[in-house]
Length: 614
Image (cartoon, rainbow, N blue to C red):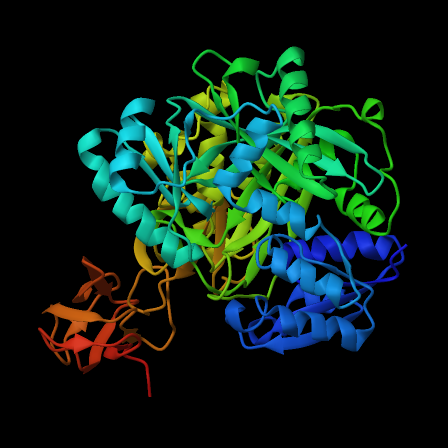
């Protein structure tokens, strides 16, 4: 058995591998870039080696540095995780040539499945059903256009070296083909250094079904059943589940047997995934499911397979890499219940899913069934790497139980101030089509705005938060059934809001801020700090600007007598007007506010004094 292992990766997958390796008594070595010096995977490993600057191309993608780190620390083996160098045949060979154990398939297997056109031809020869299309060497526009006409529109142009949704174009009509081909080739050349393409028939109601396979060095290959990864956004998986809904026993047998044939065709060793595309217009049928590609590594969504089979796939990887036979035979593997995984990203769906970076002041995913993450509260979300910060997995006796459990966990999450897609995920899990399992890869693209979460909390949640903020304590115990209510002025994520608060009898000093978590969204509610705003109540009578803005009205003069609640100054900020009022009866002792002036946050605008001040 391997006794020391270097993980050539970062984040949640590095932590995941370390967890299993440690349980097996294997010493672990992490590698890290400048940005990851304080990362969780570095802290969890037995040893860690710095390999370069923050950009991946200068650290995690430099194979020579990783091999040197393994040599320097006495590591016996290298586990690539997924992404980065995991499917790089040259790196795998370099690891082997350095006298180290490569935890993954052989370089020849990676090469055989690395180019989509060659892999598709190989699968056809092995009797694996493939999507109708064109795989030829003639890459001229004339030949490709002729083949597209023969296949029938719509067709899909795919870069042969593509992946991750790059180098793919759907073409609906012959007149659009030439421009789409140019665009696809340009993206493929930029991303993969190879502009060759293949053509496939576009499947109208596509479902993404994949089968987990595993091989050893003794000639054994098994499958661990299928996963459904049809819920995607721009070709990126969002929610995965196992088993696939609507999969009957005969269809499962056919697709899983085809996956095993595919793995055997390339003498596959280790964990791999055979990806299929299914035409779901008439349900899942064996004659309507075709080979798409093979991923020669552990998949991001491997936890759902682990949860329904009870198998630790990383443990199997390490045992197989050590020369052991597969721990179980095919007949010993079975499906138990249902599992779903959601990918939690540091991104803001309300702003076009732009990545969100910064410090995780709050990172609370509650009592999730399973969380795979590489960050913790207080960690920094870096702009250098993939924005996925956690995988949240739920298990249930059936699909609906797993779905409801996952939705409940995500809805109760609280992450701040980094934005996440948790609210978007909750909406997706609750969408009628997903509930009914009538899903295809275009669902998110069609529904779009319907899956965006609310931009502010419900009135009840906002009122409870405001009451807790004013009266002290947390969100528990504050209800809106008090007979006396008043308006309170607050800032919700910096935007002014007025909230109707019920008077409470709960004692406690007001807090500086409070987080409201609802439906997977998190907001920060803060008091309106200006003394002149009702409910803020500074004792010295100073009227301060609560935010940058422009004064549009000064309603009082210096020395004027005012009464509590009287309007003093009107401020325009954040496209809204805000009235600053007298906190008590008194005299305008100072007045620096000038109509039309631009002022900064915290600027003194006026001061009210009572008649008894000395």
